[in-house]
Length: 332
Image (cartoon, rainbow, N blue to C red; front, side):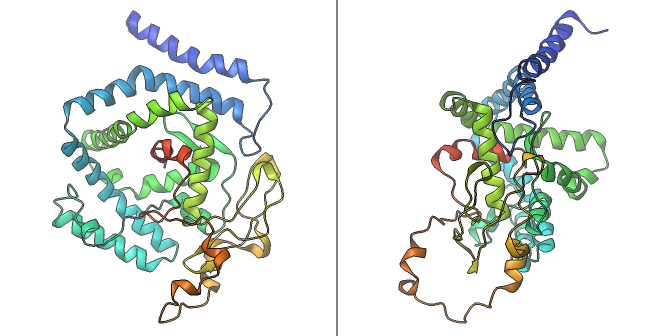
């Protein structure tokens, strides 16, 4: 039988989910990318209640007990496991060079790096990439669909939510035979990720007038940037006509503007002019010259375009989105 404190906690969690749903049930959607906003806000409030009551205190205790060096080593181990998924998705996207590099990272970090505790591969020049099956679907032209907030998990969209099933099936931890060990690994990974977000979440709470909207926009922008390898075509807000000029180039491949679909009021990345997708652009791009042209030969207009990549191959977000960049990644 549940004790009184447990029943009280369950009532608090239930009300944190029910009240926002009742209050927001009649509200109009503010963004065409978020047609399910009332439901999403209710789930967001529920997640925030669970995080405040349970997850954050445990993460703060984890951070207080273990020094930074130990936490970094734990994070590196799970990053090494994740490189297996990254290599697979790079292979599915036809990025053979990146896939070979990812396999090299796993081999180097699993041996010289002592099962991944030390990120030796980065010191050897093997770049860390960020890929998952949701990005693979986007690479081949599958649209993101409406924005979703998943219980406990957090920000997502319809495409990425479905892709999580494949990510689960290809995660090496899934195939650990001992259920106790498997659940311990999943719990430790989630705890490590949440501990890394403690400072970011505090800034989010104090800096954002509407944390839900701020987190949603940051997540959607970041996922779009990842799908397009850091150089998404320029777009305008809320279904307005898109700029006819490409924003940048992906490894010398000219990008093409996409158009938005009004279906279900969501932004869809699958209907670019001439059936353009990142994969199609990569397949039809001319081969690079043997000797790169000097930087001075680049047109001045193109040099002024904002295309600063980060070390992970994704676009450097704006300062405000940097506040929740890691937070949005927790749903990946």
